[in-house]
Length: 103
Length: 241
Image (cartoon, rainbow over all chains, first blue to last red; front, top):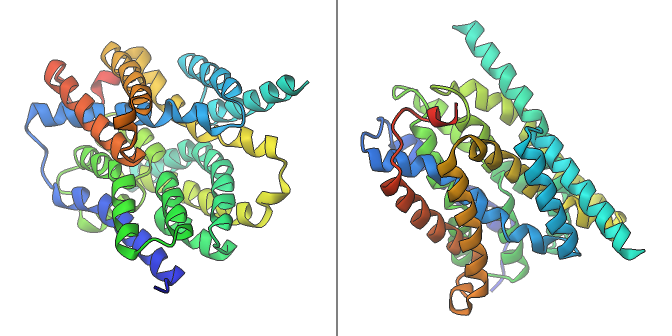
């Protein structure tokens, strides 16, 4: 079957937008349930943690370099370095670590 | 009122700039993946502008490369991006209940992991202009990064691409660690989440479940247990203060 790249692109955009827009437009009231409120409060932290580890360790050429970058990023974030600072320094850590390991 | 709005927008731009720079670097590596899947620079930029989703786009490019059916593509995007449904639900509680439909639709477009992260950290209710401010710099950063990644990705040496690929995760860490430092429940949850996430990859019969689905199942399970054991008392985000 022949597939059109633009139809793929429309499907991607439409499904992604629908997922984001449905709760935002349908839930018009404050949720009263303490359970659901608590659940939604914890969701972002849990999901970002799951997405970060162990995926981050596997994304670079060297898992050791990524593990060091992970530790560096956690420390920097713990002491209040900005989003951008943590991201850039994590990249630099991998670059330097992989460079040193090649020597 | 208008002054408050302008201020909210400006604050959004301020907090959005680091996100935009991070996006630029990450989108660059995404552009390389798009090129491998047969997308032109223009097509990739359109995908990035209309999707604004790292994992979702990556999965989409993989599906195109695998010549998947349209239905498979739709299901894949649904599963990989389903976490945005949870974030959108959370954000629906962060805005004024009487907020107009137009604002809700425009805000929905901008719900990414990072923009959601900074919006949920805002004290009290969220002014939509704050999100628009962040979006106004983050979306171009993401789109232009993808475009240039397709054009120039292969020029970059492998070690630079390898280093750039952790940028996104560095940003995730910077979003979750500061609240975890202030709130012991979040700290424990983050650690448990990472341990279980790693365990799921090791246990063979669980690891066959696609990564996107595993993320959703784990998120729902862990957050639900946490909500039962440690219900949040106050308003949104209050715990973080």
